[in-house]
Structures are given as C-alpha cells and as structure tokens.
Length: 497
Image 1: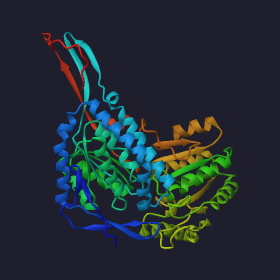
Image 2: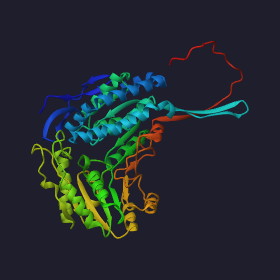
Image 3: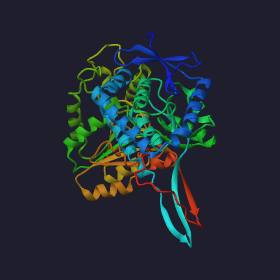
Image 4: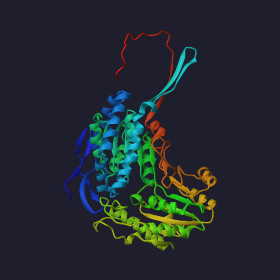
C-alpha cells in the first residue's frame, strides 16, 4: 500500500485530526492502491464545522464586490490549471482525460454563474406601499452548509453547490467520496490561492460516520447531496429531522424514446455517447433505448457497428472509455448481464469479453448492449450505473410514454424525432424533470436548475440556477417608516468597497 495519505482541509490547512481510520484509494486502471484517505471521527467533524462557523461572520460581512473578486480569481486559476485537476480525477476515478476535462468545464459554468452574485441577490423595493411606509426584501446567507459528493463527478458535482453557497456569503464543509478524494483537496488549495479566507471552504474526508456527523450537527444549516436513491432518501429524512434544508438528488433510469421518423444515425451516435461515456457512471446516462417498431433491428445494427470502434483502456492513453471505479462495482455491474440472460434477454454485445488497452488488473468492463429486456427484469428496473445499454421494443409513442411514466425514477429522458408536434407533446406529457429533444443528455446550463422528479429528487429546491441561489439564502421582508431625513456628510469620491 502507498504511504501517501490524503488529509482533511480545515481552517486553511491540511489537517490530520484524531481518527486513525483510513480507506484505500485505487487507480482503477491498474487495480493498485495509490493512496490512503483519512476517515473522520466525531472530533474531526466538530473541528471542521467549528472552523466553518468561526469563518462565517467575517465572510458574511464581506462586501459583494470583494466576494465577487474572489470567485473570479478562482475561475481564472481553475481555467489555467484544469489539466492538472483532470489528471487527478483520471488517476482516482478512471474516466478518460477528455471526459475529466469536460466535467471540469461543466462545473466551471456554475463558477461563472456565481460571479454574477450581486445581480442574483438583488431584492425588491416598493416605495410608499402605505403612506410614508416602504417595503423591501433581501436575501441573506444561511451560515455553515454541508455538501456530500459522489464518486462519479468529484469536481463537477461539488461545483454545482459551493460556488453559489460561497458567493452568497455561506461557509462550506465538503465531504467528498472516499473513492476519489484528492480533487476536493486540490480545489481547497486553489480557493486559498484565489484569496478565500481560511475556514470558508473546508474538506472533511470520511465514510458514513462523517455523513451522519454533518446530518446531525447543530452547526450545519443545510445539506446538498447527489448519489443513489436509497442514500438520498436517508439523507433527506435524517437531515430534515435535524431541522436542515436539504436538496438530495438521487438515482435514475433514463430512457431515450426513438420514433420511427428519427434520424437513426444521430440516434445511434447519441445512444453510444450517452450510454458509455464515463463508463456509464453518470446519473444522466441513457441506460434504456425505447424503440418504436419497426426500427429496433436497424437501430441495433447501427449501435453495434459503432460499439466495435470503441477503445477501452487506461484513461491516460488515447481511449474512449476507462475502467469502473472499483472492482466491487465492476463485478456488480457485470452481474446484471447474468441477470439479463437468466431473464430471457439477448446479449448483443458482451462487455465482459473486452480486451483493454491497459493493465489486466484494472477494473474493466466493456460496453454492453442487451436487446429484448423484459420490463420486469432488474436489468430494466434498477439503476445499473455502468456501461450497459438496454433495448426495449414498443409498438407506439403512447406505449413508450406510458412505460417511461410508470417508472420509479424521473431524472432525465430524451425523445428523438423529426416531428415537432410529437416532441412538443412529449415534453408536456412526460413525468420527468429534465428532458432532451434530439439531445441525449439534457443537463441544464448553470443558469437553469438541475434536478429530477419522483425517486430522483428529495427536497423542494434543485441545484444551481436561481433555485440554487434561493436554497443557499433566506429571504427577509422589511417594512420601514422614517419620520426625519438623515444627512451623511459630504463625500465627492466613489465608494471603494
């Protein structure tokens, strides 16, 4: 085992804390343990939350102009050094470098959105609402906020939350996944370089004990989470019981409905890109193609042809798809292929037979295509979170919509068609939070908000965009009457802060 230890980051410096528990961090492309990460105990959790609480009054009182400058500095530093961060992500998650860079770019959109925080925090003013009385509103920060991040996007998902939280005047404790924790530590040092005061951004490494500590802490005012539905539900229920605001984004089973008039070459490209990018470890991955007959056979042929050209291997090399994050997860995903065969589905392309461009000890599973998947099978009903694409055949648009709406999840979906009327009907009738029309992965840009419906989202407020700003702030309404004017003295210069 490597001697390199990933510490916490608390109050502006690396922090070892009291807990001596650790977890291994793997390079998924080689199967080797490259680092160990500290796992926090209650004392470490208290140190992180108290550091954030101590930093809050000063950061809350910092002017919007100064906060904005720090966010902008962070944006510039991140842009200039994103290749360094991408290499860290690839070394611990396994995704290819180009995909890691794409993750950073999408996260940076939220940083850029947060640069405009002065506009986003503007309130409303009504003069003379009653005789001599004015009414106005404003938004203020919550205090200390907790962010619990998944393994699949160690840079992007936390960036959905902390740029807005920090820009609004809050202080942050980030709990990254113990599978790939180094990105959050790297980002902490970048924030410090950008001029963020110590204690505003803290990193608490750990497992369930760290999660429960944040959920139960009387200091932490809100929890933001992205992950599987069972954990999202657990976090929502427990954090709510402790009086916190919660936005808990859960799992998904995203469908692509393909109508007979669709451009099947575009569909095939999109299905491969959306099904196998990042080894399918995306909550917005397309995992089910719903083909309205009679196009299924032709579409499968086109998808299969494209799959033949995919190169699976070490993400640091010239490959299209890397390994899965751990051996246990690789074996779990591969087990769904066995389930599919048992349930009578047809395995068209079996990823268990992949010959990777990389170390044979890596956590490899190639792109897999399964046809005629029964909707009663776990392959259809459960989130696989790997490079397994299922084909379900239906007879009509109506049957396809009914199938999608009957599912437990409601994260993302897409329709592929050249019929504008069908597309408009689909966006109205479908019971899903994020919809693509001839777009396979409908992740909203930063100034719109991200989140699903049903078992894909717990809490009332989605991530980033205006809803994200509202989540990290509280509104006040002030009713004011002044009987005498006041005079502030003469000052002919511009105010500086």
